[in-house]
Length: 302
Length: 302
Image (tube, rainbow over all chains, first blue to last red; front, side, top):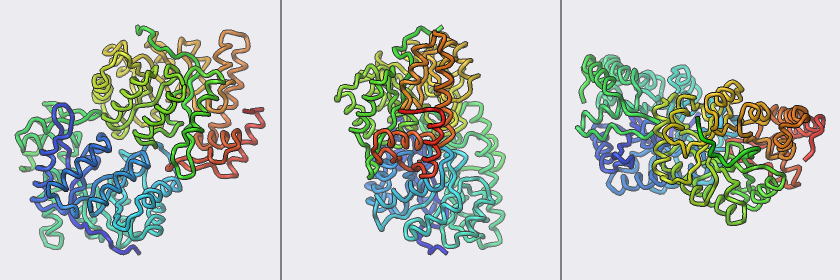
């Protein structure tokens, strides 16, 4: 049994990264967005996630932006930056930097360039990072997202990592989209902080002993999703979950990141919020209209 | 029809990257290996490829190593470094650096984190790099390796890039492992420099008007593969191809990069040559024995 060493519980948001027209990061808009999310009641910010287009940013852009956030007063204890890259030295550098700034955790992709790699190799990759960072302050959350990374993190590997680094490897984000996998995680590793990668599984995850969710749609519906968490033991819980799920399902029917940025652009009245970095592309006007229409149909408003 | 602007023709090798036991790059062993390869007659060095574990290196490690190579006398006109990463600023930086050093070309992966991206998005990614690098000296070879990158480069995208940047987008490495795709490239884009990703298709590629191959196994069998190229119009051509193919097939029955490093370790009598960076793992002793036995059976000797 894992000891529960996670300081996060509830709803975390992989904050979207806004860009200027020249594709550079719009730091001020990012800070404003993160402050707004915390004001809406989210438990933490999983900045530099998949939704954040973090793997489209350089290491320098990530370290500078994180420092800017902390210097601007975003509490480091609310931050769980993504730090996993293809390259060991980059992962070590980002992770060490996050720990030095006092971040309460990091969310770590496996190295994702090579496919079909062994558990032995992935174990070596995580172990090497933990050892090279060499800090008792590191709280590592594994990031399982096989649809995108195409490099899954197996139950056997998780068990081995928890056994080897019980004070460090404290949780996981399960973005498999497969409830059976989340259920297995909850059963196999009690005390391990399991976060679903979608709010659609939030109540089920909590009822199974999980910690919460880390969800892209939290960027636009933070209060609605937080309500599910806050009322998890009330009679309203299932209705609140159903409402959050309806909204998620609308966004999920469109390209997720461009759709969320489209929504942010409408909310902030800032057209630049629509900008994504290649290889992603912004939402076509027709799709954007359809998105807003369907969101209207489920009564969604930011 | 593309104009043939490629200065490369024949056999290129994605040079293996040797590491020290602490996993840092062994620059001297890398230089020695590259010099040996050129001495064996290869047309060029596609350093920082998949076989080179380049995506397991940081941007700084790559730029420093390339400078060390050129400073040490490796002719830049023989170099085609890999420069494609997930992140636009990294790809721009590596590409600009290679052009500044005078490299005769770069081999560019598409951004490979997001999957199922559109041709429109991939076009934007390549176009942005070309525009940001902004150099008439850039010769860009596309790197199509769907089994690993999981982001294919379609014929339609290639056509669009050639049309938009006829002086810059001059060739492709086809590591699909699918001869039908290589054949289609040769038919659709005469004058475009098509390199097969395996010497097994070398003669067929040349006979179809292609430029050659860029092949992992060139690290250990450079002379044997070069012989196929040199004798491509002689009556020996098919026999030489069959012999090179037999050797390739042995290596391909094992994990390729660890197997090639195992072979280099035996050849150089340097056990450190076996070292790979996680998530790859070195070859188990039993597999190594089996590899050497099978190589003996096909009469392979370095």
